[in-house]
Length: 432
Image 1 (cartoon, one colour):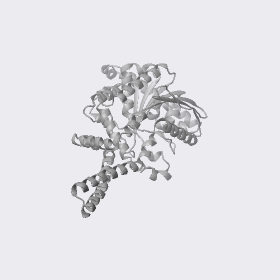
Image 2 (spheres, rainbow, N blue to C red):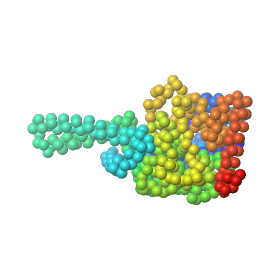
Image 3 (cartoon, rainbow, N blue to C red):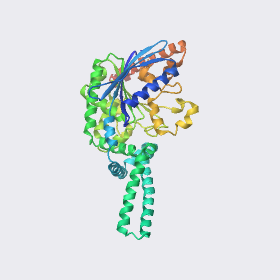
Image 4 (cartoon, one colour):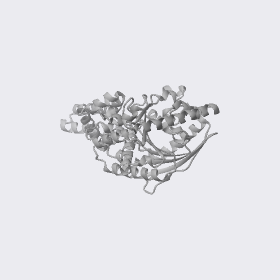
């Protein structure tokens, strides 16, 4: 029952910071996790594969009555993302605006709003900010043109000069307010998701295929009790793509020995799945929905405007998996229960910070704890099935922990029995 060896495969979202900053954040948050639960956690230095596409490290976590070794793979896309952000500002602006209005006229933005109005507002924000900045710089250019006219400068020259002032000012504002507004980053994100949905980014697909091959190799070679594939933010749909492709390479992937669990957190599946051209992606969602050898858990938080809260990744895409459906289990996460009350009011308005709380240490013990998922002894599926027992193992006294392990064992036995019943013919089940 107790996980002594776990293998994590983490797929990053659209984040240009990449390995160096992620590893530093992970190491810092691991220390906070250790202090919160009074544990000892030792992390190794990252080792980067020769092709620079995967970085790996390990964590050994020790408590009074359990010890867990975690192998951690960080799958990298930051080189592609950094190339996107290095694109000329004018190209980013024109491409993003053109794509946004195509989304509006196709009804996709309206569908986003129907699924989750907060996300629709969030994806519209950079365009509203761009409009505001353009209006302000346009007003300055207009005043400049009128001043030139008052000095007797001919209209063609004054208009040309005002246009040059407008372009230069807007470029300057976009460039030097980026750290405060994130406009260019979010516009690049819009462009990327559109191009990925329309299969216009073959380099991304090729890397996902290589990551699928990596997953197959790990599943065949590891002695871990469970493999957890973590997809955060845009990594949610990247991880489902990788897992579905791995199942095509090896249909028995989840039957080799280690349990395979897909954990999507802060997910935004509709930004790919709501496009009419994304038929293959929706078929991959259907595959995972009915695959009996894979557990899929999707964690959502109301306070995170960058995820689709209360969204069913299967039914929400119009997929009818029928009675064969078994995935995903949708789990609501309350950040109010994770963040200390003295920090929560400030925290709730820091939208990027809120979004990253899914992969950061808790300030208060809770059943949802990313580092307990990574380093703790409780299997992920059982953690989500009986969260009170998982929390008791982390915080309870010896008697409470013994009770909790019995609860978890009962939950696993019940799940296995239910799975066995599902394999039987309906008539046999009805007849007892």
